[in-house]
Figure (cartoon, rainbow, N blue to C red):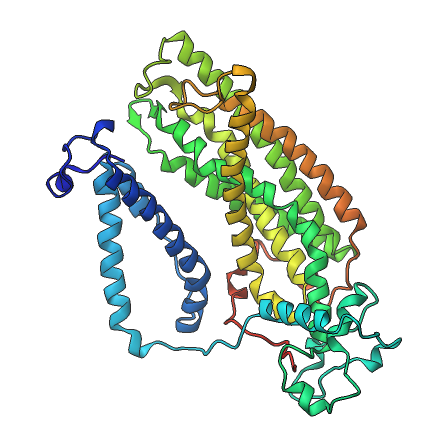
Length: 459
């Protein structure tokens, strides 16, 4: 966080990478940069795949050679400088072709439909619902496919008021008021979304566990022995094993899910997959706690507690199992979440399930920050030392990992109870029997359609 030497004259501070070179201006710039990076990544994750789908049909091959090369650069100003320059160049190239892109006009968001239903139902809270669903409003538009219509259900009847047709006003007049009258299909999709909330809340803690793979695991690896014989191995190799574990376990889950689908219990496959991913979360935390305990013992044995920058004589490959486990967690969880959401949400919501998975990861990262803060405050009660200190050698990450392990076990119990009480809607998707021969998990990125609101809230 100190000022790079190239900016020392401009900022009026010393040119060394030392703590005393940090001023208020540097802190403001640093935290502002973090916010800008977060905003940029959020826009990138949500928009890039959809935009590329509109422009090209060929599958884009990912290349990690740049990541491997940058990992060998030690100076942080260069590490950040190279991506910054590349981003500027990429932005200029992108803008230069802005006149030739295929642009699909946005047609609204299904999230807007949820708010419309809530507002319309609230505005008619004193109206009495008809006994039969035939008395509620549904579109008679011939352009609407019957597949996109969701039949009425008897659950959450209070939301049915959004589809009540007021007898005191002409129907044509009510249809023009977009926030006063909604279709039965709109109401039912909102019901499905609300009913999924308790189940989806249990997914967030998996995101909390997943986030430590990009934070504490990497920090531990930075200070361990990277040698494999006489060869120095970059940390990015652990991320490669993470990605391989993610892909292979996702493929394994996909094959087992197809077999369950062929046996007639298709809706159970995603539920089992999510439970298995939570078990992997527990195993990952337990493994990480044991490895960290060993690492701290090595630190004490070699007198490195007050030498945070020294290499610890312990191979970085001790961290390999937890990277593979967290990859398995992410691979199975993402595929299971997508499968259950595609099967259970309304037709107009299915284009957003990938974004929901990204959102769960983001909430998990936020939850990870909160968990560290709370664990630190609780651990220092009674005058004790906090688990989180300025260096890893003074910290007690092993205790934090054990805490995450038993919290993950509690989360698994809550998930099982929630899943048992959840009532599944009848699946409208095709039977996967024809897909049993597929070798790999499907690429759900193609689910990212343009923002579309098929739920035409005729209010």
